[in-house]
Figure 1 (tube, rainbow, N blue to C red):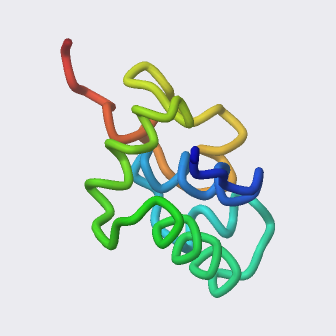
Figure 2: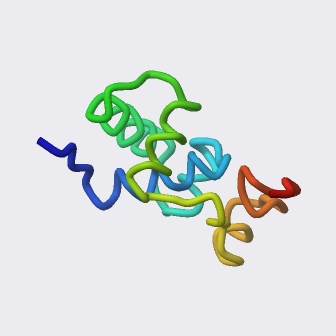
Length: 92
C-alpha cells in the first residue's frame, strides 16, 4: 500500500526538504508555525521517519521534490531566505 500525504503535508515536506525552517514554511504558506509543525509530524509519521534528512530523501524518491527544485521568487520573498533551497551553491 502506497503512503498518501495530504496536499498540505506535501507542501510542508517540499519546503522543509528545501531547507526551510518550520517558521519559514509557515510564513510562505500563511499558517501558524504550530500548524506547519503538526503537518510535518503527521507526514513524518506516515512516511515512517523521525529524521529530517531521511524525510528529504523520501521526498525526492516520492517526487515531492527533486534535486533541481528551488524555492520560487515568491517563496524566497515570503520566507526571507536568499537561498533557492538546500541545493543552493552545490555543483552537480
